[in-house]
Length: 406
Image 1 (cartoon, helix red, strand yellow):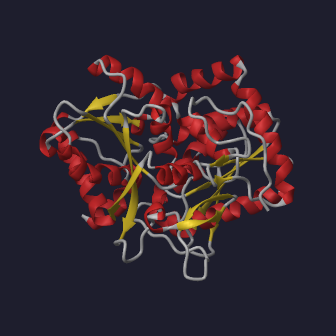
Image 2 (spheres, rainbow, N blue to C red; image 1 turned 120 degrees about the horizontal axis):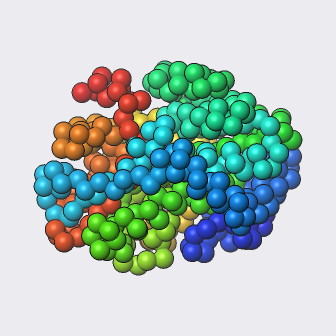
């Protein structure tokens, strides 16, 4: 059942969607058990009131500055630009955020909202572990209990982040069903939420899930694109780049970069999905080869088998290893506003090597998919044009996987 919920006054973006039912065209909505409907209505009201409250805004932006380390740098990648030819390449350095990725922009916002709403227990799901670490971090900061659900396979390949979460005081619970990855961790988190809905706040880590999460998470991440506007004005005396590039799994880092530019037709945008072992094999290219369906409370594109069941996704990157995608990305694909391409596991590894050896920056495997796409994108533009790539996270967590493949 699609339990329609009002979204009046939500969000900061000038972009007009979602509508009052939480839909981006045909996508989005809230396909949830009846027990969660009151919780989602409470969340819509809570976020709407908070975002319009100057004191909430003050607390949020103060923490972004004094705790997260914003604004993050916009770095001109001069050697990468010279190597690839064509457009000038800038990197939006979300890898410099506290905890090493963009995820904390969102967890800071949601933990403040949870406290404001009187919730006393925090749960989250995580794939690569960066959202789990960011959630555990803010829970430690504010003294709140934290439970993070993580696929047992992801726990094996992201042991460093598991140790970080536990050191921060979080309980990490393995998801051992299905593919034992992000999809299954999310299933477990939703089961927990249904059971403990009264006192529990679920901090979702991407622009996925039932309304209002896709819009709310985008709003907390739009600081990324907003900073780019200001920084590009100083660096190039330009109000906007010619092209934005970001990796897309659930899609939060991409929406944070894209959101403030969606109403500017002069800016092209490209999202890079994980082609895994190849589009004819195991992959996580949901927008490229998926079909509309419902997963984790929202209608979006979804990898499905011949019987309509959720298909296994695969990526070398745990953060992109997800068979769904945020509903706003589904709408942006159908409308043609954003173009979505793919990069394989092998290409992502080469993306790591490329950025490391030209700029001295080791990117997360998620980010490396966006870097890999630059090989074909940059030479198609001239040297007076500008590309901004979202460097969504640093590669410390992936060094085991990277070194094994290298």
